[in-house]
Length: 270
Length: 242
Image (tube, rainbow over all chains, first blue to last red; front, side, top):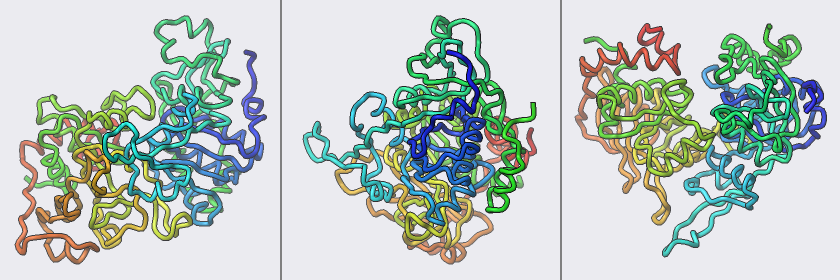
């Protein structure tokens, strides 16, 4: 696998793609997202696995997103995701509100190549009322009535995330972030940025192989040092609290957000 | 022993965890997190605690579904939920106010509530703002329902409601809260004035007991240091630790 630029990595993501991204703590490809915003992608169907933060907020604020399929979008201790909230109030995005394990089950159905998976809970919620793609059936294995929800398979066009390392064969090491493995299994294409590209073959390393996504699931890898900034990357670096607080403040207003996107660096100070 | 309002709430929640073998705590929950850690310390380390978004207070290593799978198997005895709105049937709303989807107020979303409320036996509702804005007659959007129709699989559900004013228990058969005690410095009248839903109460309700001194000592020492892992700002502000 030859090394490519971040811009090249995201160049072929089409308008309207259903794109899966991980939580703020699981390896967010922030540098690639900024490149995607600069490219002016439109009408993304964003699927958060299962929640998101600054990445989703930025994509929504810059008009890249048509649909948000999510269990929650928040800037955590820095407060509300201002652009997400504004877009909902203005009716600018279509919402597919869900609950964390339902999104995970949908992704697992995609991974297994089955049309749906059953999941407990949800019955009696307004989430279920507003998700016409969810179904309630009577458990066919039960002796008496037992209603249970079916969630349809999620097969993203693209999975996009950031990881600590890849090797030159395109194997990607994800550490404890197993949801990245599920995302790569379920998605049609998986695009990854990494902190570093290491020598050797990660799949031949007994200790690393269990936490490595084999190259057959990986479409392309680009190196992006500090590629999750201002978010952190487990085991590599902490989140940049000041930068996240600055973003949260800016994102409270249209003007603040525009000014932030025009002025704020897309990368961490090296 | 003098104590802070946060320390009283931690003491109240800790009492509600008695006998629980594994307590899990979600995001943005420093007070429930401190109570869970205090409960663990009181059990001489026998009780397990999972604090989401902490470095060292959790063992989740099987992806985004790990916590929910553990809960589904009955491995989590207590969990905490909150709501922008909570109503008299213990329905919670984490989505927003107004007509969905284009609401006038939008919060972050339902997270794991629509699942965990069904499968965790002892769900403690916690909200430190007890007003008619938060404690409403009927929520605008049900992220997760307080009770379910007969026949719906539901080993879990609401167990208690803790606010800055008082402690309530919840009767799942009646789908109704009962005021257990009023926190020191507050009154039944204040609670009635600030609650949008009907609930049961005694004319002269008990006062919530203050934090036990030996527990306060533990809290300000060992627990303060531990809760600084996921909540450094909270540990600094409340316990001047870290």
